[in-house]
Length: 117
Image (cartoon, rainbow, N blue to C red; front, top):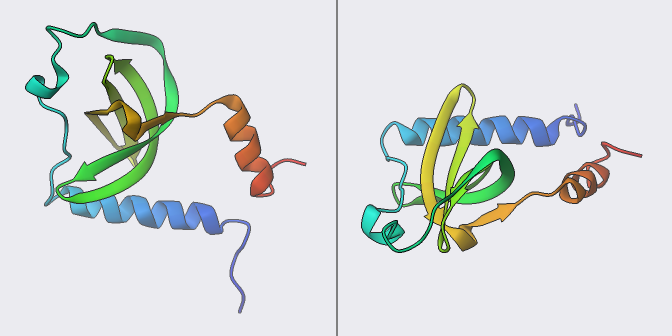
């Protein structure tokens, strides 16, 4: 019996999410500290319409790249949230760990995976 190529990415993504959720029960989500954020030095920008992003996060020592939303930023850091199944996580990461996803990125990704003609 063959594999389901049409839904393979979705199946892989759900399996990865379950793995991260299982890990989150024993390894806490890491976030930058107040000392690292330096909010007394760097201005904080809060976005009324959060931007989609891909971001590197850590549960304990384990890194994962997830899709989420940028809620706020400083000159050096990004405050992000991401959802895995029904659980929403929020943390601060260093700015370079966060890549904003544009509409062009979404269209290119869908074309690459057969979602658009």
